Image (cartoon, rainbow, N blue to C red):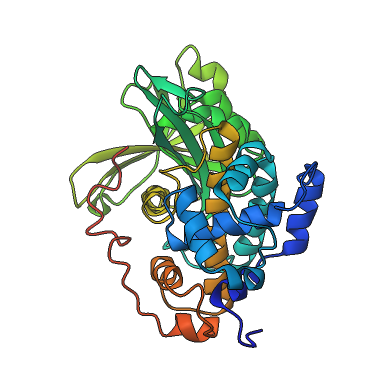
Length: 389
């Protein structure tokens, strides 16, 4: 409902605050808290994401300049950088993680019928990880290299709507394939991965759970060909084979048959090999599925450019995870608003408009409907070489 409310308040109306309160209660977020609540903390951090604030001092100065409007934003406590820093450092980051996961479930329900470029009814996920660089002096708990710290953000992206279905934050030394142990495979779903996820024992667990995978094969890979299937070489296909692994460890890790598809990219001339446990899809569809993996790379690029996850407002592990999860929840919130209000503008354009209008009293639908798409940086210019790892 509009009724002369500021844009920030209209945006927050799309959040299930009853769910947030349950998350706070689950992790005792208000233990020994007197005035500055977990919701105050979340709203201040969400404001920082939406308005591109760069520091706690920046957040404090901007919100205090709008002191008379804080109540209408939902913020009841007094905003100070010391209080916000203390909340980020001590209040359990899992409050915001659980809340973001609830938003993700809502968003995926809204985008379930969206097209992602391949005619397939099953759910398709792209799995990848990105490294967020940190300063070793300020973040000594996350050592990575001799003079560098970092954390790794593992993301399972639902290609319908580009909604992150699963996120896991680890130290940067974590191998990509280890995150497969954290996933609960969805029967019938497709998991698209690059070569970093080749661990045949872990891939076999996906097969045992009735899930499918498409992974790019390595150059040095021992196998025995069982069958070769007919293909149309004019499409760029080189071979479509049924194989078994023969390596000492791979044969033990994956005792079942695999499908090996070799494909020549017509744009770059690069030869690519894919391994999958699905024997029903046409081979070209398998190649197109892997090409869709690029969406998760674009997702990482987008959130690093447009959300505050490269400069952190606190130096502890809890503060970093809190900020990352709140950033993800803001991304998902914008996706929910875009779908519910049927806005044609891109997420980038919506964020740009919101960043300068949060305190205006304009109906949200009117404000965003008048926005024009200017998201040139998020498009894929000729897609370059989509198959590079």
